[in-house]
Image (cartoon, rainbow, N blue to C red; front, side, top):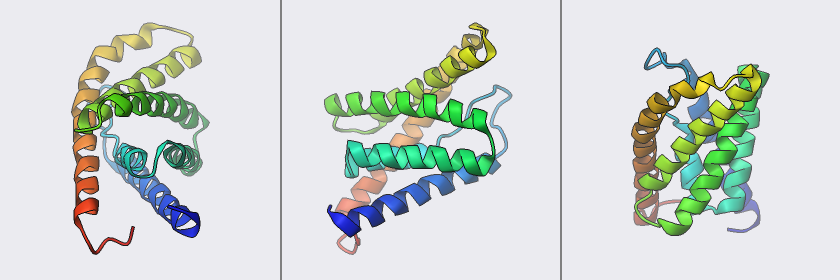
Length: 168
């Protein structure tokens, strides 16, 4: 993609990721364990990584994290999101290089990395390693949510490539 079309697609993907992030913020916690979320915005990150490429996906991810933190009004949310998001992005880039299809394992690796990144941020901010006691629970949640978001991204990519009426 070039020029205006690329900018438009990236803006729409950023807006979609932000909207999914904000909608997910309104969903009550699924468990009593802090930090477990579905990760709906990661569908857009994985899709953009596979469809738009690494550079565009990085900008979409960063814009979503920045805007999401501004809208949620929390500096700590930015720190947790950037640590988890950057590690997730890096791991998915590496995983995507080796695992072209299906996308769900790439998403699972990314979800695990996201949780590890957020726990590392929490450990530094709280000055304790005891937050890593949550890791086994977060790993299970990452496998489930990563599988779900990976399947969603795969279905969107499949539909996009199949549909002749797609604008992109």
